[in-house]
Amino acid sequence: MTHAVPSRRRAVAALLPLLLALPLAACSDDPAPGPTAAPTAAAPGTGPVLAEIAGGSALDIGFAVAPELLDEPEYREIVDTHASLVVAENVMKWETTERVQGQWDFAGADTLAQYAREHGKKLYGHTLVWHSQLPDWVAALDAPAMQAAMEEHIRTQVEHFKGQVFAWDVVNEAIDDDGTRRAGSPFQATLGDGYIEDAFRTAHEADPDAQLCYNDYDLEAIGPKSDAVYAMVSDLVARDVPIDCVGFQGHLTGGKLGDDLQENLQRFVDLGLTVRFTEVDVRIPTPPSDADLAQQAEDFGTVVSTCLAVEGCLGVTFWGVTDRYSWVPQWFPGYGAALLWDEDYATKPAFDAVVEAVGAGRPGRG
Image (cartoon, rainbow, N blue to C red; front, side, top):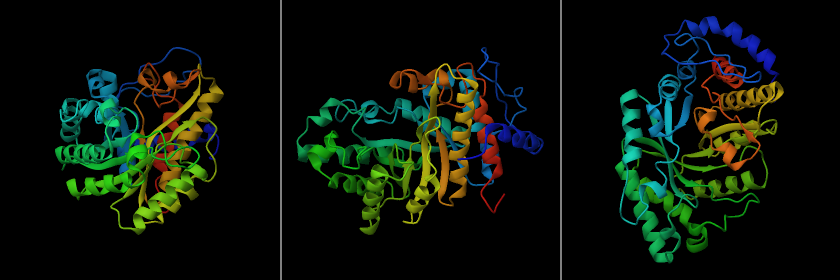
């Protein structure tokens, strides 16, 4: 674990004069009410910009984006200012793009793609094959029909965004917590283990230039689940299946991050793959205390600094922009406040911790 947040803040204070010399886009940080909100943002246009600070370390700073929220000025300003990468929070998932078999709806995804193109952001694709947010008709298919439908879905979606999406989460969450293949997945239950290889080969045929990733949660610690993913991707690499990267989602609980994160990332990189943190948030009890916010800041800083310590870790994407729209409270009652900006768009101590970690750069490169 990294040092305490007060030390981070002193480091941030020392770093800010250098950061403020960079050309900065405008950002909006209205003060938030309440004794524990701890807003730390500077006035618009004067604070550090994550994407600019990270540029020298070739680190992508990403945000999961809901295109319809780009009409909200504060939300839009944060993405405009701080993101070098955007990923669709929901609008590229199967239930949205092909709710009815053979009937395609790319409206929301095209809106995000246009935004990325016009604002110079990388566009990351999420996700092609996942057991959740899946239309009922897919699970009702027999094996030959499901195989054909899966391949057609991948081919159509990847070809539609060819030249726009630089990387895809091809298969999402295929391994259960105990390290077994997820039996509740219609793809696993109907097609067996081979569907994962088939999905990657189909995606590669549709866009040979796209980076192809496996993505999952609870991979941060070395244990049954991460060992199983490691074994699976090792096998894919050994058999020349076109897999390029592994996404560590990073949906964390404050104070639960272990000390083997860097070792775990490195073993995947040693296979010849790259790694990313793809869906980072850190949930804490609500309403949060100052101690909760301090722990959250430490955890966010650790994720970023650990990624920078591993040469093959290419990016950190935060799963949302503001606590106002976070998915966490709905799924984890009593927890929330999981992002860098609070419900009133004020930065939290976690933002300062990320600024410090990103500003430190990659070891040996500054």
